[in-house]
Figure 1 (cartoon, each protein chain N blue to C red):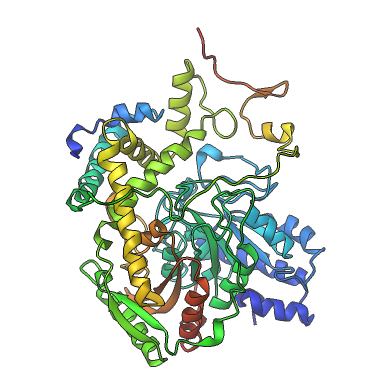
Figure 2 (cartoon, each protein chain N blue to C red):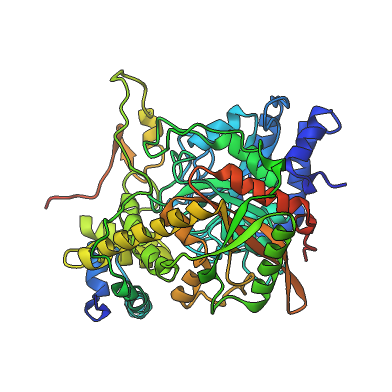
Length: 483
Length: 95
């Protein structure tokens, strides 16, 4: 048995019964990274020596005692690089811990490594990383999805026990689906964003990518909760996210949104997801067709709101306080223009320009204000649906993992990768992606994700349905043959 | 809402991003397509709808006005590309 193939809760059992030592857990991870990361490229950097030092004080009685948790390069870990996979932040060393990282440490975990992503979390494939894409462990010629593609790839390739990612329009759930792991986007405000480099502040949430549903609940128990450092974190009671896992789905109402089974959905993915829904029915869930009528406008709404917020958030990268600064500039405007022109990658520039345009004088009402109104309608769609059902199930991604390079020249086709995930961010609700089967492409088995969406602050229900499905199927146990 | 008057060079200047001639060409066509796509929002009747900026109502959060430590000065300067005497060095603003 390889230690690195185990889940967090399995590792904890072994640690607490002293069958393995915290040092073995860290060293096994180091070996695994050495073996597979040269082909996966999931890590931008990792400091094994530091982890070895930190693990010496591990208290295995703590909720995550002695377990290394890999961190997306957009979350600040004091003393570690935090570059957002961008040239403009190359060399940046985080001067403080994000709240989620402080919480991980308090729970005994070891924040580990810097995991690859699309630059500033903008993208769906990790191909926007300034340091090269990560590869999908199930087929190295394909992307792992994104933007938390590195997080999903390292978890799926067993070179992480679990990872943190961030989700603005699907950036946790979509890569989890494409890599065959579990990815949870919490309700907006459930997890503090303090120390998460901001992309779109009204949409961003940090969440876990894990090998099974129980691990997602365990990580949520550690990272959730209001935070005085984030005024948008919501003062809601934090439940035990693992409490309802074993309650099953008997009698639960599961909504099937008809707008999610339309043209553009890969037929093999549709078959797989429909089979998963039949399975949920066989477990006792009541499946009800529902309608989310504004679904077709979610993509357009998102690609106005998210870039608008990004254009404001990324104004801070000015080459003065941190990061890259252009050489040989002629005056202040030239300083800004060259620093940002040379420091940002193409997709980040595109989105800042798009966001600046939709907020600019004369266009604000036509684009931004209108999008904010459609966002209200999208939110109302979900509110109406959740009056009738406990959770909503649908595909996470319209296709399985796509080829590296296939969509890089066509931003709009890349944006379509998130078509089933971004509405949840705009509504602020929670959702999870879990493995629900495989499709075959060019002789390779590619994972398919089932998305389960829940009402705001109803992560427990989402986890309950996810766990019931997972524990009565085998998909989460499948491992890729890397190479 | 018409993408025809989308001047990528001007907007990039507003965003303080210097583009290469190649980027101007590529972005104009790529973002033109995106703007064409998002123009479909015109089909939605929003006349009776309130805009929303946030999923949940956001209120001010207050705390007691008590002094506490903030980021240490040296640490705050530690990532600056240019600094001296405890200050950030900026590019000359006035002639």
